[in-house]
Image (cartoon, one colour):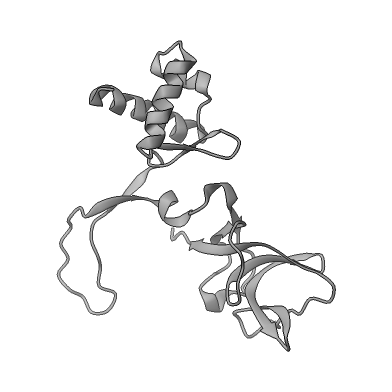
Length: 193
């Protein structure tokens, strides 16, 4: 596959994904790339998977890898005392690859409330949750406790599993009947406007 044709196909795929918010079907890929044969589309998809441009989920649907808008990494910045800064392109990084380790098991939630403010999770933040990670003591989890959903740190109190807030205004929750962990919080996203 020649490089110019590959680049053009990647750009068409990227534009489709960024415009529609979803990946195209195989027949839509054929239309995008001007191919009539599904076999030809399958071969290109296979090469794109090998190049980590695309992947497939457990149901065989295409999912983006490196086409999801990477952001430039320009270097580091001093958070202590000011120092001379020089802008230099160090690398690029897809935020999806940085924040989501298991795409099929990941989901996002918007935070309501301030019980985790001491852990740096504030009202209006978005959290990325991995439902495929086994929760361990100290992890921040999304849990259903006695029929109510909450986000707290998983802990132990008197030998019992409990949910610990990161704000002294709230009490530790010890389940009366049931505790079900839906997933482990792996990242927090905050926008400054």
